[in-house]
Length: 277
Ligand code: SF4
Image 1 (tube, protein in one colour):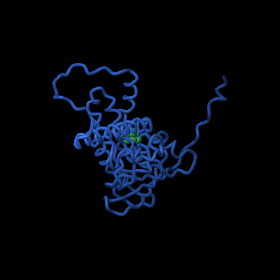
Image 2 (tube, helix red, strand yellow):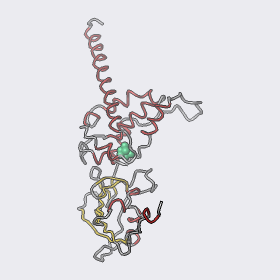
Image 3 (cartoon, rainbow, N blue to C red):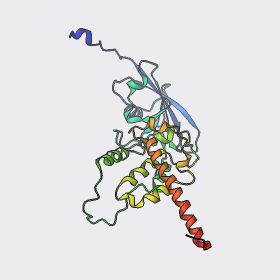
Image 4 (cartoon, helix red, strand yellow):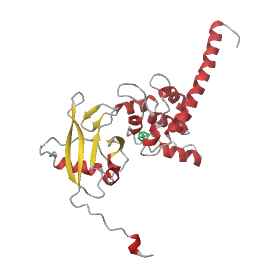
């Protein structure tokens, strides 16, 4: 094959600029504003590397020296989940958001905003406590009986293991809550992540011992019944976790628990009233 027909001439990016329009907010109850920063375009750059560049020289496009932008980041490889933010109106991880893919051939303006379903601590950094509180509510862990060697755990089927592995990749980034129309900044809905983690730990052979407690954690105000089935969560999850399947599975478990409770309570009432049974 003739190379001349398959190799494209490199596009010159010399002098190309990218403008970052970044939300600034000095504290949780402070008013917000935008600052604009202009950077040289660098092929392969991601949003976090651009934020680092701005941090080194926090001078706005109109020449004002301002405090460095605050954002959360730790692993820089889509594992810690802390750099989720709205990038040009779409929630995503700043570490894996490549500038080339965001701006394409269009206008090179990138707007960065903090996630809106969590309280802002400063600039792009938010408080994600509601997610961790939801994980506590559904007891998203396996209880252990001391720290001594318990020997090999119960066997798992390869099929279950495959599902559980996928569910275990949740990085608690909050993207699924941000995209969910049922989650608001001031309501209690736990969102898809905690529901999916309840499914994960209920599938675990040892975790099954506390399955009912997790199912009960999904019930009540802010629980699984607040899901409106918009299915946005599954579209934005950076780990492609099958969140809508998890919600359907746990909805069934909650329904079964409700039916069990109805019969259990009826039995109790009969005993209390001296009725048959
Ligand atoms: S389920 Fe997906 S989007 Fe939601 S917190 Fe976990 S990784 Fe993020």
